[in-house]
Image 1: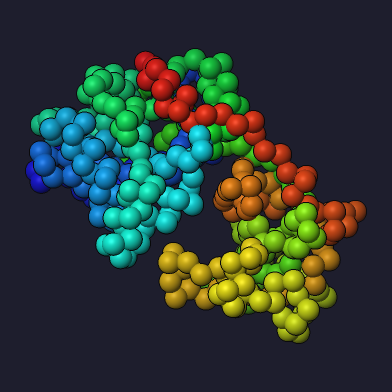
Image 2: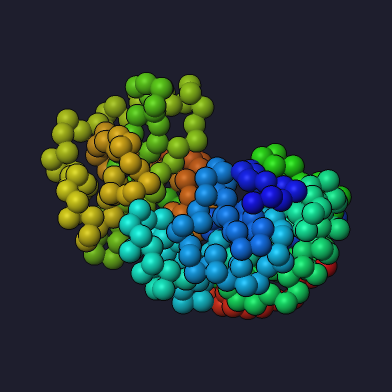
Length: 358
């Protein structure tokens, strides 16, 4: 492979802001695997956000890219999988499997798509120093003849339309909106774009915590919600605390600390079979490897309000939540799934078929 921009390349990143800023290019924020695609004739490489190749896990997409991309190019975009008209991140994570037979089976069962939103090189030209608006125009022209499963991400310079996308596209599983300055040069690894994500709040039961890697302070709080049958399900974690606050939390939660797992709703968390019928902390995962998943059990009697972006499959928080406050006025039994807002469904195919824009 001999391209003007060679792997590995770390993608340009975005910083969070509260509102959609004016005077920029706007795109939907996709919830998938960020990838840099390198093509040099028959050679294709899919580089992950960390620079490690993902190529072997998506053989069906490699073939599609070979058929639909310009002969020599480098693209920034997102690998996604759609199921029932919306993005399915769980199906995407299942694609990262060590067994070749499993990779082949999943390629047929849950094929992936690639959504391109930036062009880093074309032919013999590196485009990293070309302004975004010009790179966008070149991207649209370069992929003018592309078809599914290769797509050009819709984009607009109209902030009102971006606001409409922010609301409507969430129903298809998208994360929010990305805003990019029109004159922006591509700077790998730097946070020069802006992301506006959905945020809601929920009252949750704090039923345990894990220690921080640095020592005996709280690393993350383990959160639960009661389902319709009255079973406390593990729904995610809250982990962003200053170090002083982590130490304070250990003291605050000490009266709730249980001497053993006996009697705790998640007592069976260490049994692999128990995860088949309930959501428990420490679920077996190829991502966790040899990571210590042990945790400290707490009596499930304290309620916290947390901020979250959206649910994954209606069962758990997709990302780490943000602690807002304790809720001594709330009874743990009142912390149910019924309180959670879910966006109105929006067919993902309508997003992907939208005009690419300017």
